[in-house]
Image 1: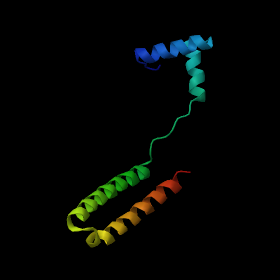
Image 2 (image 1 turned 180 degrees about the vertical axis):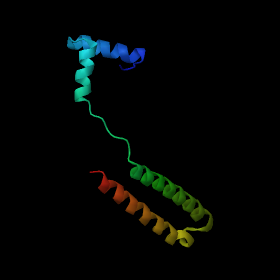
Image 3 (image 1 turned 90 degrees about the vertical axis):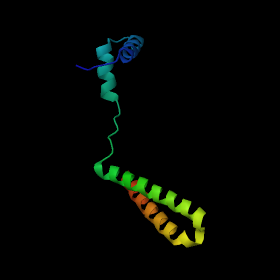
Image 4 (image 1 turned 180 degrees about the horizontal axis):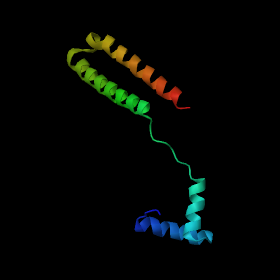
Length: 96
């Protein structure tokens, strides 16, 4: 048993009709060939939370740089950018 909205039911019914199939047969065939993408793992979700926090920190440092001048914050910005690059490298190499 599967629940569908009226719109989904109509869409599947129309596609089944166009294919010359009953809706149940169309749905079974579609389910067999469907490509499902998994959600993020807990580890990946943690990486994205870390990246979001780093982006927030970078935004705050950028604001301070405008107020106090960039030279005073250059080292902090460079260190944070390195951390972000390392995390992005880890995320992209895990995406295999």
